[in-house]
Length: 332
Image 1 (cartoon, rainbow, N blue to C red):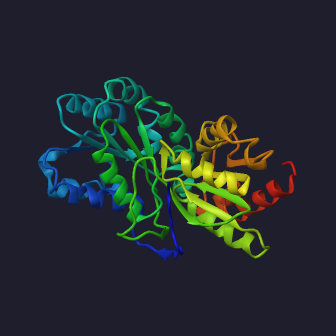
Image 2: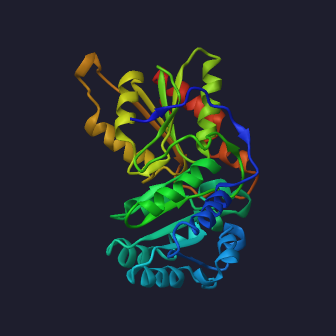
Image 3: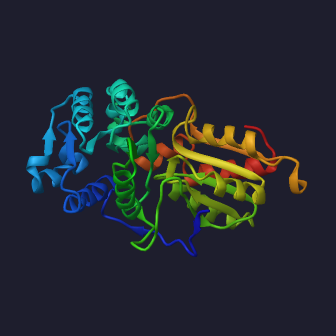
């Protein structure tokens, strides 16, 4: 069961999750002297260069060639080393997906993927750099585990989880700094989640940057007397089914919001899971209300991050509006 935060206090941060993940990678280099890091000529963007500066003999820049980078990483991992591959999510999950599937996941190798610019967090960089299908690609692959931290503390924890989990792990990180919410005292685990806010009327489920939008939506709804429960599903695969079911049984309404295509995202997974496992007839429960927000089979566009997520219906305002609609029984 997930831990419940007593009170969430958002604090402005100067560290995007991609930087915090890489900073922890440098620290971890002193603990584990064997793992190596591969990147495709964007180390200054992913901050993996920090590891290269300290451990140049364990850092490999393979040039602008994600498929080849991933293949080389698979080769070294097959020889027994743990390998971290860093890059932009849109390239690591599309250009290199065959290698990830057949030469990393199939032999269950210890390759950990630092995937930056997840979803529309790469807003100003446009469609070519917005990884809005990455969760679908990676969560579909057998053996792959998927993490999506939202702040610097959960990003640092995600690195530790990845390194301590046998086999391939994909961690989705953000382009820009947003907020810090957790502290060094908070704990994270594969298959875990955190209940950030308790409520009895509706369950809001999200991960990564949209967690903050879900909290904003909960504040907006509270002004209308609607108590929203907010869950940070930072472990996307496997996700915390126990916490989800417990919350759904109490609120009888679940709304998933994610910075990703709706198709084959976490919302699809949760919707299917609830169809199979929700106790329709127990405890007098007759039905469950469910909805899912994400990109509606469309590409994003370049622009200010907050304006872009609002346009595509995953801002706090849009989540609150969808929650009202779901509770009222209105159809979109």
